[in-house]
Image: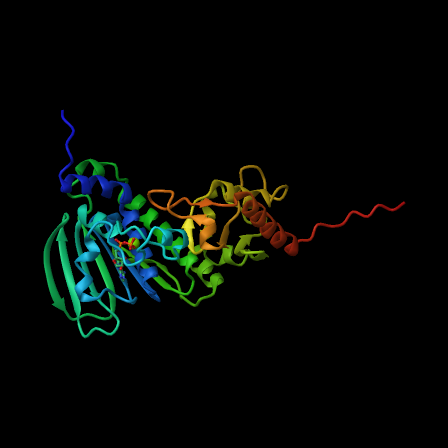
Length: 338
Ligand code: ADP
Ligand code: MG
């Protein structure tokens, strides 16, 4: 076959596949947009593991009526204008890929009213094609609804797990962002049942309580450690509590939920000699570092980041956690009597 440039509908489905792997990816992107919009309340409603419907509503800044159709264009973003800004990006989004990707693989509706606007706008798309744009009455903020996810991509749909398993992944995403943004009130309702409801009090411990329950929350020790321009805060469990896998460790870098094997190792290493083999702590570790010291653009789903000085960060996290544990149960000094 000769080389040909793919028609744009094929190209956009391929691109969408990178960003939107499963229902939880839709929820992640929409929740990130709501946080970027300064929301104080983010409500997520799903049906059938998100395949039938995902709806995320916020009370954030909204989108001005004349920009609503731009939001669904690829690489259209209000968060970045120059390559240089990529080095100091403070928002969770910046690529302008989420909304067009979601719209390419679902029937999407976005309803929004910008702060200060008299009325709202609703735009509907059907697998990437705009199907309507109307003025509507609505509260300030934004609601994005995606229905019949992957209805046009049967191959992708076949790889999804059960509704319960996809719901669990969505619950994980919303929970991690609730831990990342304790000042925001999060709710998650799955098939009519509310499975997460955080107070949005601004206190990290309250978010931990909502996500993990009182048995774990009462066993969490505060972490606070400042080392030059690195600051680390959060909570780690006492050695009395441990889990059989690493998924109870939440790592946040500048309030972005990321995965980093090396930092996860720094956390578990700090428990050396305190936990049985193959047991892991519960932890919420928030690393705040200057934006230029981390590259957030190194991974398709932005789940991994790169640090300019990974070694220094590793030891800072290690000491932060170790300090918290020792403050809780100081190691007894062995005094040798002559
Ligand atoms: P990105 O987040 O990378 O900018 P998206 O495709 O996720 O790209 O969103 C495109 C644009 O639409 C955003 O830059 C923002 O201006 C606007 N937008 C999306 N969701 C919201 C929301 N919940 N509230 C306000 N504006 C939003
Ligand atoms: Mg986004």
